[in-house]
Structures are given as structure tokens and as C-alpha cells.
Image (tube, rainbow, N blue to C red):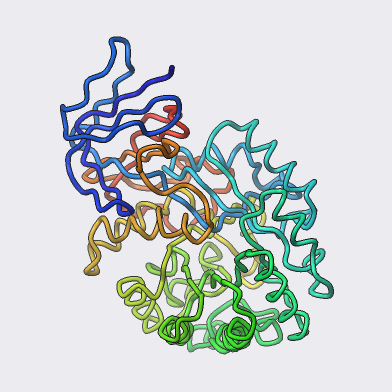
Length: 427
């Protein structure tokens, strides 16, 4: 029987309201006991890990990470990104369906599951396509995708022109008790855009994406959610107006949740002012007012989760005029440190922010993760909250080095990651 005792750690588990010095005993890949520091006695030969002066928390759950495989293995692979996630303290990742081939049939799900198993690191769950080929013309084989293990359905950022087809998709998803994941975008307003519709884009001569591209898509979806009763998750919100709409929907008791990307809490449209392609993201970095609203929405619970929105790229993808570069940030390494940084500028405490990256996203995905409950899989992140460090491109474990954060100073560094009771990373 494989056994591990984590001793003297400051255990923070938002799901169980634990915030205290404790020992954690792990046996056969599961959490077998949690007790006061020094209280758990084990057999001779049990592996021990001293977590004195370290924070012990559930492994992070990332509800949106594009891993590039299948289809774009020149950018990254499931193996490379699963290893990078483990080293970043992320033990569960959710992959959207816009791979190549699209995740619209069980065989693709089985391929990703096999690659994940072969990698032997962080766990990967997948969203199935809401429509066949993500083309928005006919519904996917939803039940088959559920049977194959998909945790939800999404059309990623691919448009569904017909509201009738979207309504039917929502209704069928509700029938199969599957959550729909929406990246709100009215593509006729955003098509070809690469920056927030504001003074910066105008000065730089960049085609812009108005906030209305987000809010119109949200409004249509909310109407159909109200009619069909489907549970829905809105991913990667970027605007004050968008969060206000989600807040109202929650007040009206619609079955909706929402997340934002960690980078949206720290960057604004001003960060692209020198055509910095590392800051080319979709949805775009918006105004200071939008950023302040996003932070407030995280504080008041309108935003349920924070994700990495990980999008690794090869070097060439970012070496072109701004509008011609590919959007996205390689973001696994910065998910935890960016979230920890938020506690310094808001009223959120450590437990509050950890909720957004552990049990809350796990609940949204419907996976048994993000908690240190006895009997659950021992997926654990242990970090030093006091260690100062600086991000460099050479320190990024992901195959994608595209990030706007090199040179940023962070406080809080992952020291150990445990997945299914196996100590897979130690710094």
C-alpha cells in the first residue's frame, strides 16, 4: 500500500472550510485522514513530506486550457502541457472541443484520454462539441459524447448563426443533464478584430472588438437558457457590462456560472500600446473600468472561477504585425501567482481566491476534484507563499513561451505537486 504523510502544513481547503495547521495522510492514492499537526501516527516506512511553513491546498482545477493536441503538436502536446500543469500545481485541466479533429465523436475523447494516461501527470477532462464539427449547422451526438466521458458541451468561439439551432442544442443538452459552456461572442461584431474598441485601438489603427460583441451574445444565450432550463457556464468574460448581465441572471435564479482569465485581472488595453503581441488575446484586454469591474465581480461572487485560458504558441505565431499574430497566452505557470497577487489588491483572502481555482471550477465541471475531503483522490498543491521569484521565458515549462509576464515579480511558488497520491513534482 502506497502511503504518504504530509506533516505540519498550513492546510487551506475552501470546500471544507479548513484553514489550519494539519497533517494529511494519503493511502492508495486517496486522502485517508486529516488531523491536527503531529496527531497522525503511521507505520514505519511511510514516506513523509515536511510542509512546515508551506501552504497545502487542493490541486488547482483549470476550466479552460488548450493543449494543442490533437492537431497542432508543433505548438504543444498533451504530454508537455500535462507535465507543465503538474509543475504549476494544476492537477485537473479542461480542454475545449476546438481541436483538430474536433471533439465531436467518442474516438477523439478516447484518444485524449489515452494520451493523458500515457503522460501520467495532471488529469485532463474534455468538453464535447455542441454542434457537429463546431459548424453550427446540426447538433452533435451529445449522448454519445456524454457516455465517452465529456463533462460538458461547447461550441468554443465558433458561431451558431441560427437561434433556433442554439435553442434546440440547449434543450437537448438539458435533456441529457449536460452543462453548456459558452464563450460569448457575436462574431459579426468581432470578426477580424484584435483590440478593445477604445482610444488605444484607434490610435494604433487596429480593428476593434466592441463590448457589444460580448453582451449581445450573453443576452441571446440568457433568453434561451430561461426557456430551456439548461445549466450554462459563461467563460472568459471581459467586460463590466457582461458581468452585470451575469449578476442579474443569478439574481433571477437562472442556472448560470461564469469565469474570467487570470490575465484580465492584471492587464488592460494600455498594455498593447506598443504593439506588444504577447498581449494579443481574445476577448481583448479592455479598459481600466472593465478591469476594476472584473475584480469586483470576483470579490462579490458574480465570477465563480478563474482560469488560465492557456494557449501555447510557437515562436512564429507572435512574430508579425500585431493584428496578424495569433491570440493567446501560455498561462499555466502564472495561474496561481496571478491569483495570489489579487489578494494584495482586493478584500479577498487566500481561502477566497483558492475557492476560485479549486472547488468552484470542479463544481462547474462536475468532477470529483478541488477538495481535500477524506476519500477523494489525493490531488494536492503545496506552495511557499513567501517565496519571491521572477518569471523568465526559460523558467516556463510549457512548450509555449508566449507570455506578457516575463520580468514580473511574483510571491508564492509551487514546491510540490501530488496527483492521485503520487509525488510528481518537487522543487
